[in-house]
Length: 203
Image 1 (tube, one colour):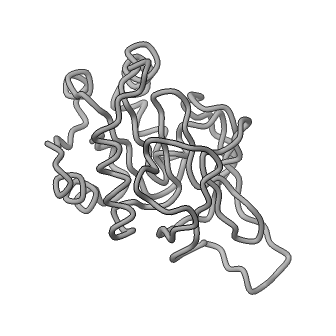
Image 2 (image 1 turned 180 degrees about the horizontal axis):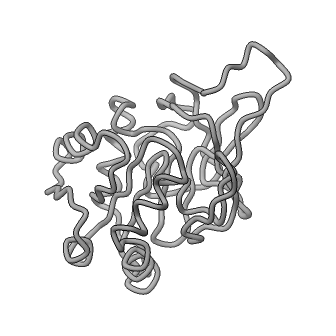
Image 3 (image 1 turned 135 degrees about the vertical axis):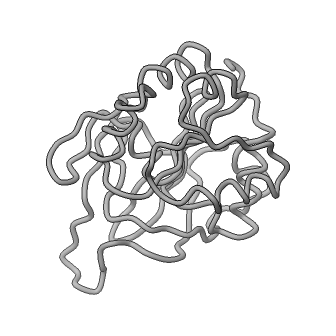
């Protein structure tokens, strides 16, 4: 699990350990290179996150390990958003550019829809995925976010909060969720277990 100073990693590490992972939380390039699978979590502002990755020298090593070596990768919340081309959170920021799309703020005419989007909401699977094995479509997952990813290609799963937005993305060996699996009880643990068992064809 990549530690770049964004958010509490303890709950995610504990959830992964619970489903059988051997977890190393690290910001060291050599640890990222040695890992069998990579998890990029995160809570906070996009700009801070991408700056931290770059200052730690992790941007290029992530590109190497994810794109060239095709390691299975899981991005969670901010870790999903950082995959984008750009974010418009407090200005415009260039992302990792590994999944085409932009990150934008929720905008609603309905005053009842508050930002941030916090709490349980149904997730609808838009395509089959090994990461969804054993999880029923329209299952509740836990969200905490003010910005959302608008991908160029169709999302793997969507959620309705004042309109449909991308709840999960899958591209080759990359899988990412806007929701927090580690806070989503049995369904979230099952998704994490599926990630541990996942062997993408190009990995």
